[in-house]
Image (tube, rainbow, N blue to C red; front, side, top):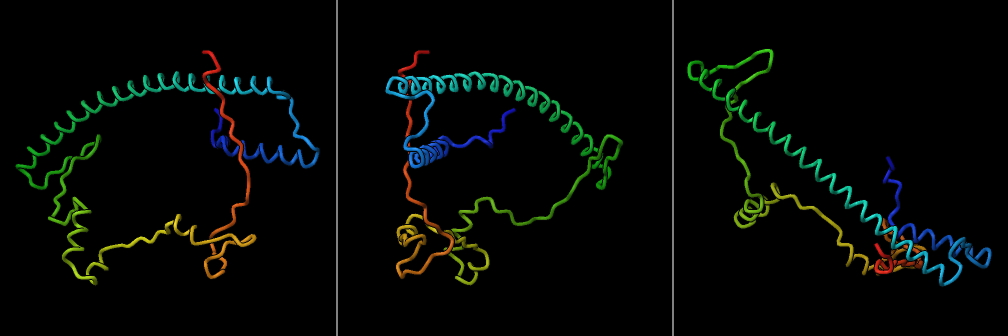
Length: 202
């Protein structure tokens, strides 16, 4: 099985390829090509890319059919077992409850397992955290709120980055002070390759 963790995102691959091509141009005056040497071969390559995209889509659709088939089978098997499981737990519950009428401390212990009862005293259960939070904010003082409300600090990246600027190889704030935890993303170019799916016949 192929390790999909080794597959780079398409944009990352193109960025690497562009960087390699630019390096070759700087070193040798031109980037090396084996197949694409003119407009005609470039068109051929784009059509081939579109064909590969179409084949990927077809394979994914075919795999999805089988995935759905197996998922449906699995769900059917789980549901059928769950029905029998519900029947058995109902029977055990009824049997043990009947026994408990005569013996309040009744506990069934057999080689196949245990059926026991646990008594829980009343306790607080939060069913709607948002409603409870609103109640606390509306009715409790600040000191009481501080004891039960957790405030999570999170940096708002968009306005934060707007407040900074690049100074050489550093990032500084409005006072010119270098900012920790950020870095300069170097100036770069990207390339976009978009095959025309309409140019390939199925």
